[in-house]
Length: 316
Image (cartoon, rainbow, N blue to C red; front, side, top):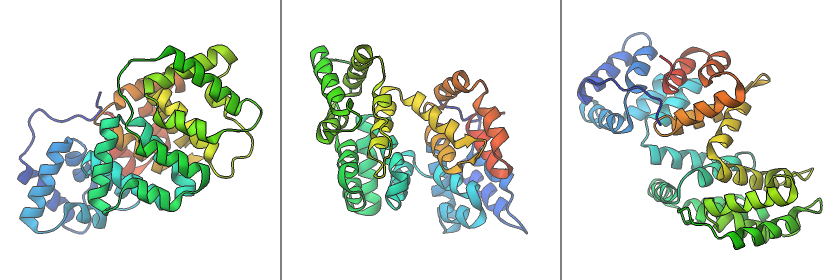
């Protein structure tokens, strides 16, 4: 369920566009007014506001926001104002620019979305950049990591609940053989299984693996040094497929450690899920962190960025 709050009665898109222009004028931007409007409009309403603003003032609202705002607040608002599918395409493209560090974002996007959602994302990517997501990933990633990323973003998984128990058992054995001797011995089979099977099938495989070997697939994939990122990508894929909300809670908790806040990861999860399933993620966060997501965000952020993110997570 979504966490943003939209008033029952809202101004017209033209009125919102006029209020935004007023917030931009004068000696400084009225950031609170921008948040008050845009953090409390859904995707369809924000699209109408963008169109009304551009028609009335003959300039891009997205570009105006980028010029008026700054820092993490600007980044978060620039993502928020986009169409949700286009937003994910933009985030995926940014990740390809620094694939050695940002490959987890590609894995997350590929595994957290349903097959239909991933297809729409790739269509939006193609429309925006005149290239496929697979093409850009293949151009920058290398080796086994590239093979895994291409398998994850290129697949169209079966999205139903039907499971083949015999297949789960046999592929759990393949995974154990591939990872059970202190090093990965069959990259191709791991990539094939994680990159093609349905989420329901993989959960059955992971459960059989745990029952047989008294450990999880993700723990079995912990193999010391990982200079290419391949084994970490495997673990992320396995976690995200097995329980997406649990994985995203892990991302959020890692983003708000005492050593410093990772605003990029915090922004990505909140902005991408606020209109979809962030309420469920919040509940899981509370179970695992013993504090609410609102409390964690309030402690680890500040300024207009804090106000905006708090509004998206549903804080009144």
